[in-house]
Length: 358
Image (cartoon, rainbow, N blue to C red; front, top):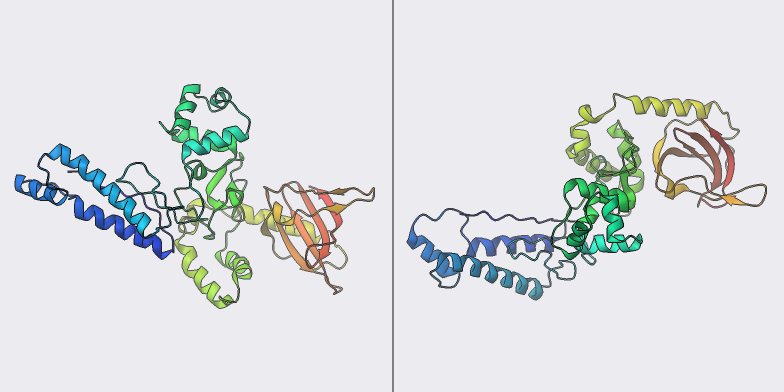
């Protein structure tokens, strides 16, 4: 008796489901998953696989037959296995990844990242506390790093563990449901390591930025409305989808008992007490990633500077000027500073109004 294990990653792409069905059908036809108690049953089963009588020989022969048939099917139907590649060398395991693009194996990824960083095998081994021979075996495809070593490699190369493993999982933010298709939008813990469960907008520096589901829906609805989906449809979808995500299912366990919300209220109070002329009162602060609003400001000496870290998440909001016109106020804050600026509707012609350390 043996069990088949499928490591299959599905998307909404219907062809992925076709691949899944084909995989199941072929393994159901050629291999019985239950124990075969009678010799006649064994003979009959392996006759289906090719008419052989020797149990051990036929077992491995059958595996080879299945692998060949799968490869033929993949090429005949042009199944999009990322350039029609069957992503495992073992014919019993198919790693289907629905997104387009080239697939790289862990050995190739580690080699490329090490080369890009200009490290020798010895230098990388020292940084992640293994031997040079271990690094060599990874890059030759003989072994893959264990869980703890993957964490060290993730931190050293500043990529997610999912990326190191060739992106076998389709990650989504467990707070808002956003697909995490790029390491650049994956959140970080307080120690700077990547947290593959959340996006940068929902989790930053060890803090969850949303404690109210309705607040999150308000923010998402503004960005998701388009010609195909009305705001009402987006809100209905979010209200149905969010409670199924891990953060909201475990909110009582994961939440900080309102501490981060209190911090936001404190920032709002500090900003409103600045009494900047023409700027309305701030009522909400939302999570904003630095790279999206890292504008270049002119200084009196003629220099132009940026104040933000593209990789960090801040709290901020955009406000319409009380005097009218097409200028907007941008408010940004963190544990360390409060910043207020103005700019045109398309984020051009920025002008720094205030930068205050906290």
